[in-house]
Amino acid sequence: MKKTIGWVLTVLLVFGLVSCKKEDNNAVVIFTSTEDFRTEHIQELLKQQFPRYDITVQVLSTGNHAAKIKAEGQDTEADITLNLETGHLESVKDVLADLSSYDTSEFLDELVPAHHKYLPWDKSSGAIVINREQLTGMGLPIPASYEDLLKSEYKGLISMPNPKSSGTGYMFLVSLINAWGEDNAFAYFDSLSENILQFTTSGSGPVNALIQGEAAIGLGMTLTTTQAINSRGVPLEILFFSEGAPNITTGMGIIKGKENRPAVKEVFQFTITKLVKDDKELYSPEAIFKNQPNNIPNYPKNIPYADMTGVYDTVLKDRLLAKWKY
Image 1: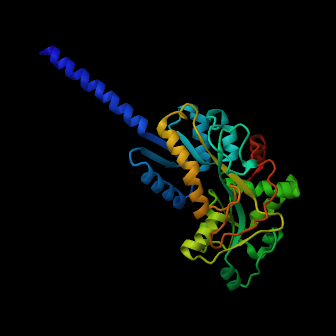
Image 2 (image 1 turned 180 degrees about the horizontal axis):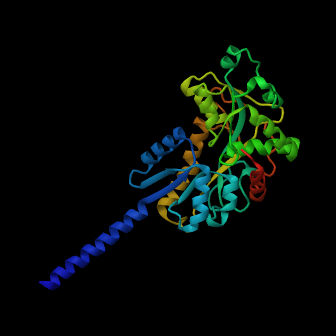
């Protein structure tokens, strides 16, 4: 009798271990920094395509996303990283798997790194966003340059992301450093701070302040502005000044050591062939693919991009942010 009970317990234990292993093999964790509306679409497509897999899409701020992977390395719970800024991906590339086996022929060649540790997810520009109705109602002119934003009549009407917490804010800082020189750019932001309603913690903060009527001018993202115009009918306009639109790229990759798991491979293959293309078609049309169309209403075409030299230099970034006072 004891032998029989022992045999049954052994079978149940083995079965339990196999079941757990099966569950583990079917589980895929994705870290992403996409906006809510983009994340929801990603989750829906993954659910439809992989009903047998347990896929978790964990949304993190850009800073927390990068920090977790950097701190946890290959032991991180993430299998796939998505929509992480290129500079952060470069800083953790030793933790990422080699993606040379995946077809990259449709991507713009200049966006695929030689080491193939990640592939492009999107390109995003910043813009000067205004509420013309609000400015006109206050009897104020439409700004035509960064210098115009220093005029006293705009005091308390401008919102900007803080470069220390927002990649959007940092790209505005770098673009003006490249256009004017470091000392002149920092002097400009010292003057601009007098007119700033709030340095927001996130890149979406200025557009949210415009939507809520708290600000009339924002240094924000083209993508989130267009989404607000199209989905909510908010009367916002997108302006680009002569220095050009600041911009960054983000990418996607697999954590090293997880690249051979069948579920991870299937999900990542689906990501680079379906998820990223849907995202470009529906939300973020700035080109990462060859011959990529832009059919999104109100999304600017032929964006005049700024010089972003050094934006992915982590040593430079640490030095510049140490100088930022706000």
